[in-house]
Length: 268
Image 1 (cartoon, one colour):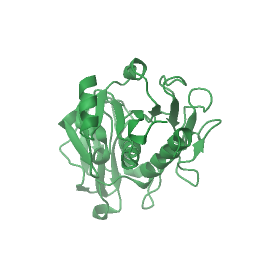
Image 2 (spheres, helix red, strand yellow):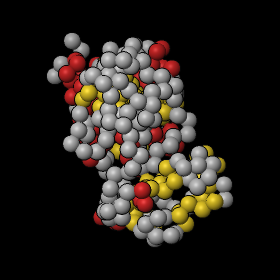
Image 3 (cartoon, one colour):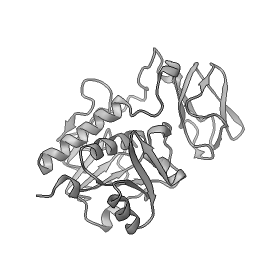
């Protein structure tokens, strides 16, 4: 049986939740982790997203470093240096080019974008869009509540409600969405305070306006092309008491579910 640090794990996606999963696995001594991302990541909470390595060559989240990779050599070098490589491969072509022990689809796309049961020895899907026993071996519940992080070995996760989790009494009001399709522009930075009604950025000349006052906890990378209605930012009404560089409890709980599924399949 392989040791933990010998298991090869690929995670599709490198945004907030995917990064929380990768961080949990890394801390549990799974060090051969590869993350796959699109060329222009759509992560909003970039302070805790390993996809930022594609913009800055490397990024560190709570003591774990991820680096941009483009070749098999880069991946091996990163593993040797105990880093997490992030590769631009949105369709997961690298999954089928090499054998993997574990494949985690962490895109949270609410639909299956091509994940198959034979992608790895153990295939795990996060949230709705996957059916355990059909296109993956296990599904991890991503909906907040008592079942968050639960392993589903038959069937699917709860359907997407479309309503953001409540924070400080606010739900949909705290989310910034693109008012039009086009390129998102902003001079604001994650971690800044904003007032209700304040202009945070624009898309195709149409202003993105804060619905509530609070801390700008997340903001999509300026220059990213977005579609109307897409999430481009996140305001936390709790203000400066909130850290933008700390992995959320939700991401950690989902990561713990993934960890448990791997340990159950490959031994503790």
